[in-house]
Length: 312
Image 1 (cartoon, rainbow, N blue to C red):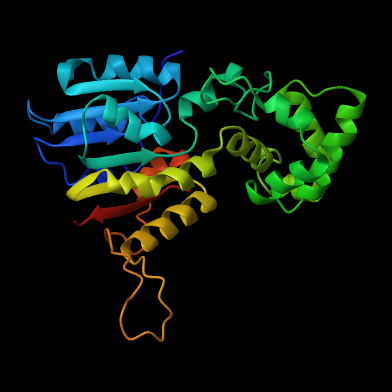
Image 2 (image 1 turned 30 degrees about the vertical axis):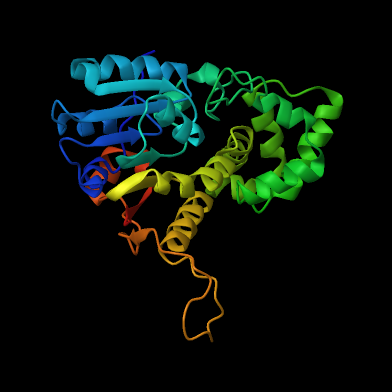
């Protein structure tokens, strides 16, 4: 299957990066290379792009897509949490821009055997990096009822989380749940018929929760975003596209803290904690897709772009 993924907020992100022709840029979630292609088009022969992704299919697709740019492009199979190490190995200390386009790609959703989709029956997988041994099946069958409730409540924000967790545990006592289809039937049974008829696909939130937990998506973002800002040159920018309220909250909070890190009590006349601002938040409110983009790509619906500029 061809790697297809329509880049969300493409123009807004490219504009937000303020690309310098001779600059060095990192796409930490390379995917099919849509955003990277537009970055490379704006680079001179001295410019450079480093693309990072943990998905082998994405790496292969991006190599094909970015082939015309030759030595300007370096592609590394890794998780963006290792960005500092990746740049260190390439003998790069600082860069002019970083891009993260979070969440699951259209390709991953549409490739049935990857087990991300709740629209087809497949083995419970959901790994973004297939070198990882743990799968969605391990979570569904191995987590306690309390743990399942926690992730479905927190990451899926599903008001029926408690009942869904209970139904999963009851079902797996009879037979281990192995496929997305089996899990969907259990979820449906846990949600009132009236709600199922009006509230979109009943499994959407639970599948999202399991995927986020399995791939540690929020922990990776929380643990690495601040360090990425340290990798930026003076005037360099980081653009982050989120698709989930919890992701967006993490980005918003970290950007604000990097802009104003002072922890002194409000009544202090001057700052004595010594924490210095690392730059400024460019987007006081997140940038969201235009009506035109939403008509062309319904998966852009929940996307938000936030931008931070480094100041030394």
